[in-house]
Image (cartoon, rainbow, N blue to C red; front, side, top):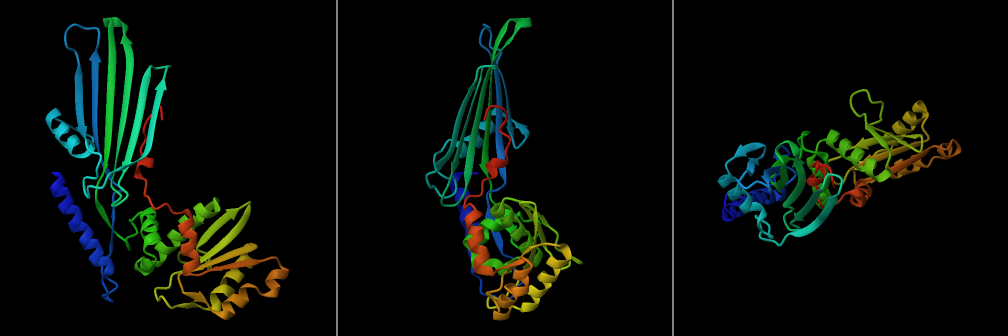
Amino acid sequence: MSRRNRLIVFKALTSYLVLSVLSTDDNTDDMNEIISYKDYVTYESSHTEDILSIRDSSHSRYYYSGQEISPLNYHRLKKAVTDSSTCIYCDEVLSIIDKKNSIRSLDTSSVSLEIRYCEKCNWWNAKYLKITHGSERLHNKELITTVREEYEGIIKSYAIDDYATPIELIRHYLNANHDKYNLIKPQQFEMLVASVFKDFFSCEVRHVGGPGDNGVDIYMVLNNMPILVQVKHRKDPKAVEAPSIVRELIGSCVMENSKHGIIVSSADRFSAQSRSNAVNENLVRNNIRIDLMNRQDFFSTMKLVTNNVVKPWEDIDWGIGL
């Protein structure tokens, strides 16, 4: 696909996203989507050459997303993506966000990696190069093998209210669009809270919410102490959390012998009675602590531990040397 056609596709998808997100239709069944470059395709080539032989004994193989293709098609595809320092979708100059070089004397190989990122639309590409020198004594050959792997982020849309949508993408999206919290489902909100708390507290976190959860949606262990978390997802932006929720968590803490409980609600605020219940003198006397987090409190916490850049390249195994 040419640069012009890629740009047309990108603009069309982006326009659709903006229209769906900004829609004022009250129909909650409307599907809102997240546009992401989390998925990627790969361009791979392997070339081996005998540098001592008089005759040409070099051999190359070319791959696109794991499928072997002809050299001509490989170079055409590769040129459209990696031979440019600008984004293939919005023409923004790419930023080099990671660059590594390594020389290993034990196997006489050199490895390099360069990752470029578009700060405007989040597209990315990466180049991995490994050159290995070796000898084949039987046939008296001195071989040089060059392996190139190049990766390109591809556009993919995700329904924000789909359980299959990665929580990482939902975190990234809601971090920039707090007012869209009511588009996700209650259990997704529980999973979102679990993801954020795992990073914020740097501790063991288990999502246990569901039928028969006894008022506990997330179970955490911090410094060998159990913490019980109850999560409430309120779609009304003006919702006020009632005191019964606090009493329920207090009961769960007593039953589970936990001294610390947290209530996270997407409600606008907790009622005065709820706040009063959370600091009841009997709780203080028994060293039981109940923390309350409303919508703004939670998103402020999420912002502290959510990077604005989704980094799918961190899941790629770059092999030995880096």
